[in-house]
Length: 175
Length: 305
Image (cartoon, rainbow over all chains, first blue to last red):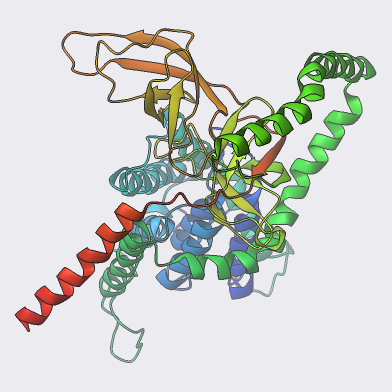
């Protein structure tokens, strides 16, 4: 039985590098900045990457990072200050809390765990804005979470790429 | 339950507990929310961060730019020719008005002088391009490519060739944010052309507009043209805003439900005109009224102290 709580590639991964976490967050932020207007079903890349690292490395990604990235999202999207930080904080906390559980599952079930987290993030944002007197954006808004959950599989592959070891047979090495 | 939730042994110090940290940051973001929503104290901080993010934003615009260029490359010559024909015809149609406009303006000025009325102020304007719709799905805003550096200030009216588009609500150094008339929180004082009835037009949820708080028996008919009344001191009077689509009069409600359609190409991309600010209307009565209030409040506080 595979004891190692990574995904099914059964490889032992190299330790993650801090700069790569920050780099991937910056890249996600850049993707979020691409102006697609009101196209529905576009995932919130920052939330997705934040959830990914919170699940994978809950001790390396603090809530401070989630807060700062959220503030930057607020300014970039012209929304109310504090809307994204609040949602990202709760996402980061919940994903970190569930990380040991989520990592036991294969990727499809992991995505099923991520979906309610992303939905909850969006619901938090909707509630904050509705209290602030904004308009309900329509149910299509929540499609972004579903596409985000679908992207969990390719995302896991891409973000773990730098941590894969070269496949080389060495008879003298125990693992 | 989790690595994060575990109490670490004292020799692995990791700062305050996760729940405490969460509570701290949540309170911080709630405070930010209240400060921004209620008091709008954070505009300066927003400006600073926006200035830093601007190059990144421009860079993020390149994929969309490339896509549009590619689309333009493959769009056939015939579309361009059709558009050209249409524009020529439009120009001819409007020529009769334009040719007479200068003459009429001069005449108007002279007549106004004769009648000893205040001359209409000439209004400057800036041409701007709509870059993209703002990402925030909760409001209806667009970003245009003129900002602080081009002399744009918050509050200016924005029009396109067909009518009022909205109002500049936030200005960054090189861009500004225009709230469209279809936004739920955007109100435009309007007048019905047919009978001169003055009212206020609000945005509705689905890209349409709504005349609220008009009595069920108000004289509004489908097809009525709405123009700005100019009472707010923001929009010039007489700019077309919307057309009444349908009027639902239900005896169960006090107010009629009047749905309108924007005249301008709201939510479409293109070029817009940012009109200069109007001079503030003279409101001496109100000014004296507002001057009195704080004084009274101060006196009250002194008495309390």
